[in-house]
Image (tube, rainbow over all chains, first blue to last red; front, side):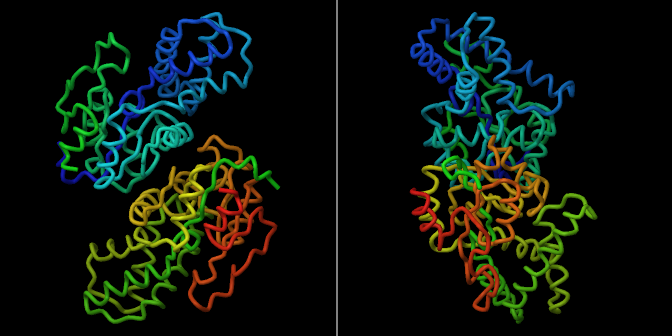
Length: 238
Length: 238
């Protein structure tokens, strides 16, 4: 396990860990529906959209499909779901607007105070499957004070492939053990740890809504386990 | 020429445009020399170091050498110069420390006030031949409020190759005409304009010291010509 004193950068999973994607997308879709007079089960629609996330990336991870950014995958999934939910009459511009709902996600309430403290000591940045343009616009929307934008696109590999972690550490001129991944997902931390990263778990028990059953607690031997980002800052002495 | 109203991101040349590399490196080397009792012409040494910058990148641009980040090129040039200036007895750690002087450069005095204003309206980031780790650490040192870190390394191509501009625009999900390069160097702007970028010239008449003869004024048909970053913010209505 890496020595925590050698960690120079904290990189963060974003969807679920930094931002409450589910509430944000439901709110965005509901507002759009109200504005256009479209009735739908937007909670269900949001969960269905997220359910297509891993299968879409699997096509790229497996090599069956060449490198494709998440904005494109999100849009394709949206088109499938609009048909499945029998919502029609939307223009290309409407579909683009809804796809960019993923650029307008709001952070959990502890995120900005926590990151402000962590930024004093560490390089901080996302390390997300979101593309650079998405993460950059989300940061401006949510006022996330990142030092650098990293993710699948800067590595041209989706998590949890090892290259996604290793190439991003190299972009910071750091060894894997000098980088900690902070995530609310045990599977992401497991892959990061296998790549040599330090690991920090932050619980997000309502990421998937009130009935969430997975990732309610740390299930691995992570270097730090925190209840939220301010607690993480406490535990790292920031 | 791109319509300025379509510009969504301002990307900046860094060495010379954002930071006063010459004064900063001279100061860093002089302090190191004083600390170690090494006498040398550090002004000359600094100019010699910078003179090896373009030839080192040319090896990579031409394909004679595989992709190599600027930190590595800076270190190799330093080793050559230490021998040429007959400075010996430095450890590997000393050489690493001096190489990282390029991570500790100070901005021109107008940069922070100008960027604070420009950041309200635009995505702002470096688009430099410096590598991501260098630019990230420089931003923390100098408190540069970048939204994203872009450069030769994220494009795997050194400016002024067209791919260095085009791939970085694509990382922002933007067309070239939606991105303005801001630079103190007419040659960089010429290449960016050829790639379809909007262009902004900011004069830095003492980048190379008191006897500077080139880039004293705009020599191309640039979209904006400004005296400094606050004047750029004025001209863009920020």
